[in-house]
Image (cartoon, rainbow, N blue to C red):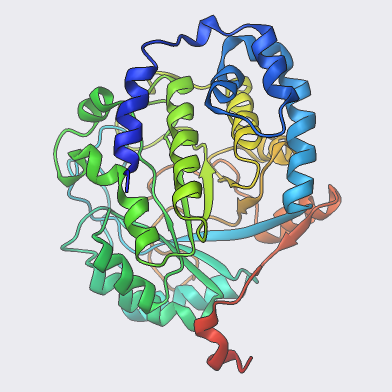
Length: 377
């Protein structure tokens, strides 16, 4: 079986033959006329020539989203279990060299936080840790999952890359989905922003979604951290990666996200800042190229920006989010946050916004078969 790494390396060479500037308005119009887009169509929609066509792209993206997803928006929230980290990533507050308040939730605190989050009505929870095996071992994550499982319909993880066997053990413990960002697909930039630690191995991280799919995970979400590399190339490789996963693992739900860098502990500034218009173009190109992929929009974006982006293909929103370790319960002391949240609205406020705009907020869109006995289904 061809791995994504092979396809990735092949397209790295192919891109030397194509310049985004070579695409013309006729190329964009051709892409917009197609029912199914090929790779060159996707490149055209990411090119400068597509900028005058954003309105047409938005209208088509909206129609495609309604056809495949209706007006349902799945809500979730993150729970940070720990913020200890072994890596020196220049763009992250959790950088091992940064002087921040490091915390790890005890199992008792995990349950306290679970109860507080469940009271918001949310049934989809994303578990996060810093990338430190010693502090947040697979065994610790699995035990947390077993504690959390009775409170939530679905559990996802956003942790350091694991082996296939380790992903399977987490699957058996109750984890359903994986979120993992390559951060930056450009290997030279990747090496320059990951100064030390196990995260420096580009390929091992690149192939983590495949290992999770092989382990039985029902869904994976991928993306690039926008601001680290040239956005057109980073968006292209994200879309290429998602397309590969959809083809190779048709039983797995594939989603993409387009997180922009937010203020954090440290002095690193985005080398390639992303404007609002550029973010819109990325999301529209994703939706047109990947009509059946989910698109997640986090609280990194402001409330007004998230409201405006909804019709462009968004299917999943975080709500009531905290990026600190603990803090949902008044009795749990919080550690330092990974980044500053921009949209600070409560779950109730996000629900009200969605309903006002004619969308259906979804707290639970499925029940895992492993819960049938517990729920007496």
